Length: 140
Image (tube, rainbow, N blue to C red; front, side, top):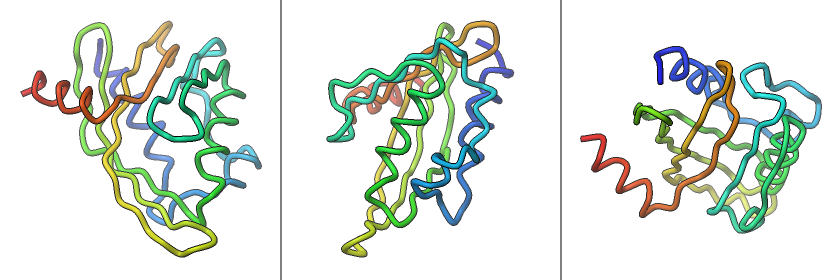
C-alpha cells in the first residue's frame, strides 16, 4: 500500500466534523464520495442493524451510513491511527454519538479494514473488537 491510500482513508474520515453528522448529511449528498470506487463493497459486522448486510456501490455506502446515523442526534468519528499491512490498511477510530430520543451519549472504539483498486476504496469492512485488538498487536 502507499501513503496515497492512507491519505484517501484519512480524507474520507476527515469529513466528519467535530460537531458530527446526522442522517440528513448523507441524505442531502453532502459527503464527498470521490474516494469510493464505483464497485465498492462495504460490510459491517458490529452495528446491530448492519450484521449480515453487504452494501454495494457508493449508494450502498450512503444507505449504510444513513442507517448508522438515523438513531442519533449527531455522530462524530475521529481517526486515531491508520496502519499499513501491505495489501490492506486498518484504521482505528473513536466514535461518539448522542441518541436522538434519549439523549444518551456513547463513546466507543471502531476499526475498519480497507482495500484499494485504482487509488479508490474497493472494499471496506468493520472489524470485531477481537480482530481490531489482534491488528493492533500485529502493528506494534
